Image (cartoon, rainbow, N blue to C red; front, side, top):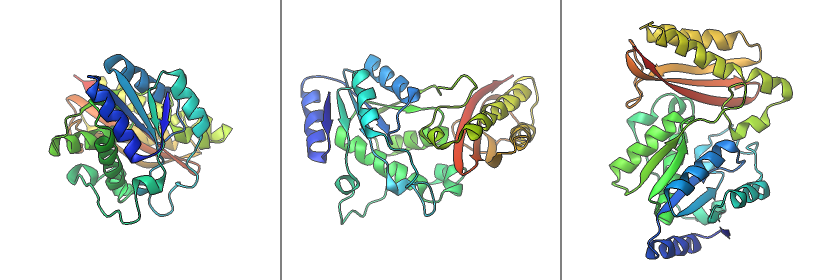
Length: 282
């Protein structure tokens, strides 16, 4: 496995892979890797010939007062995990390498980013789409792999790929969960023991709405209220937002029939966690 830190070197690596007729799979990450990332790497190994993983804590997607400084970093462990999973190359750029001093460009997807994460965290998705577009340009993958937990992010990236005619297949892997249902997340490392126990409330809230709506309830508001009510029963938890939305447009639903997505963001102490669940209603 190679470790590469510069734009020129990763472009050379990718160019050599394509010249050899290999299909490139790409898993973009911010590090603090866990089994969710491993599942994406394994999917990339199955579906492509050469796999690249980027590890980069992207400052553009953090706003003032957010947890950029606290965000967990474990580069040595992450590299060992990638090596064990058979990754071909790890791209480890510095901030200065990806964003030189005169960097001025932003990639923006408009409507899909104006609510939920985008409303609560202004500028967040501009940072996401800018860094992902740049990484796509540098590596030129045939397939890029993302987790379903960050559902809005996946929809936004897919829209960017479609709008810019990027020849990349965005593959969405299922959310990987702990035994108590908590979605694996790098930010879980920031939780104290009592907070980690309390964080299971996110999965419980999603399941309460799923049971209600899949049993025949048509009111999206009642599904949302079920999520909020579940979270409020946990003293260490505070709802940031909860929504029942259309899977493609992310518009809030009034009535639920067919597929829908549950979106949830919750503060557990000083740590903000998000989760989602795709449901199918009769």
